[in-house]
Amino acid sequence: QVQLVESGGGLVQTGDSLRLSCAASGITTSRHSMGWFRQTLGKEREFVGGISAGVGKTTYAGSAKDRFTVSRDNAKNTVYLQMNSLKPEDTAAYYCAAGPRWRDRYSISGYDYWGQGTQVTVSS
Image (cartoon, rainbow, N blue to C red; front, side, top):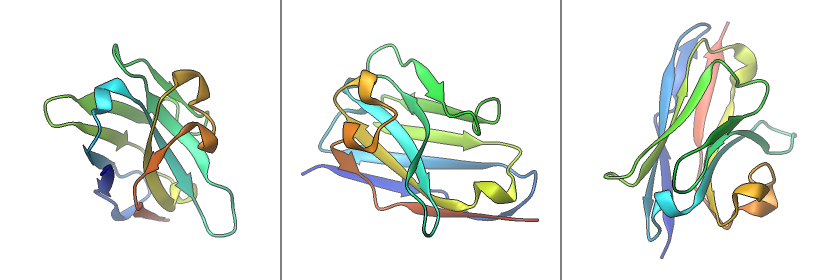
């Protein structure tokens, strides 16, 4: 049984940092394309960043570039999303996901497994 469990969300102020974690069981994160998405009420879930299987190439949405970093700890089978210089518009539920193909990384349909999400709220 595959489980992805996110943690690390919370309420922070503008300019603060947070690190989200995604602990996996039932799969090996280094063998999957791992993505971070976020969703606010009434909006579609959107891609934030991802890390490839193997060598760990990373890619980011424009809103996250230069502020967010995706990384992976193979020993812990955990993927992280480091978020710096947070803004109120970053407020959302954040989800991690695992999929088989790096080329499908930007699309929700490219992922087979999803976590339950963790809420990030950035106050102004």
